[in-house]
Amino acid sequence: MKRYLIRAILTKILVIFSVLFFTAQTKTIDFTELEKTIEAEMKETKTPSAAFAVVSGEKVIFAKGFGTTSVESGNQISSDTLFRMGSTTKMFTAAALLSLANQGKIKLDAPIGTYIKNLPPKISALTVHQLLSQSSGLRDFAPTVFSNDDAALGQNIRLWKEDIFFTEPNKIYSYSSANYWLAGFLTEELSGKTYADALAELVFRPLGMNRSTIRPTEAMTFPLALGHNVKNETASVIRPIDNNAAKYPGGSMFSSANELARFAVAMMNGGKIEGKQILSPFTIENLQKPQFYLPGEDRAFYGYGLVGFEDRGIKTVSHGGASRGYGSTIFFLPPQK
Image (cartoon, rainbow, N blue to C red):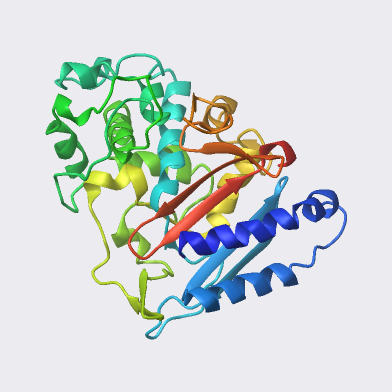
């Protein structure tokens, strides 16, 4: 689902937010207007498929799929259908690394060279905080290794020289997926597992996100929406599916509206879901709180894998993503849960 479609729908959600907040726990909410908006936006943008979920407090109060998995011969989308998320993956990479920090396996302010050997000195001196808050000074660039093999993540990073910096660390916020590739590789080194397996063990499985995965070969064993391109007002399936293990931690996750809703419940309730402490309060707090302020913005900030700002007086944290035919946004209003 394209990001411009999602932003249009989020506007509608914010408009009806006050109704959700004051009535979610007391009566059934009529989502007819929201569904009409989604369907109208899909028609206008020629978007073949979309799925939405809305969480209030500890409950999923709306979850529904729209359209079909493929314009060619697709099946009906449901709220369990997998989509590729794009850069919303970053908050999950951050959650995995924060979980390891909570276990005492790494300090957020320690040089990563303490944990990853034989990196160039300037890269070794970076900290987890600088990587996750996009304040490392790394420029944004494409990976130089292209492979479906898990080893590609480390192989890509081992080729880096100190010319990947455009400025000194801690000087300015500057978005770069390379920060999260390195954070994912650090997760591998600390856990002794591939990034995909570590993410599943530290985040997905504890939260009951049993279909969520990084690997396309796993995603395709479940109901999966295919990525589409819209050209001349006609949608067509993109072939082949984009895949490069060298950039997995920055934007390659597959998930569904229902499984993302489980993560949202944990985020809004201090890491608890169904009464059980799944993610630590340490992880939840650090994901959401201001870590580095954005230039030229009025108190807008980057947390760890999340952007914070106010929208019409409502404090939010969110992140969007796009990945060759797919798009996603996860949007939180923490004070109102």
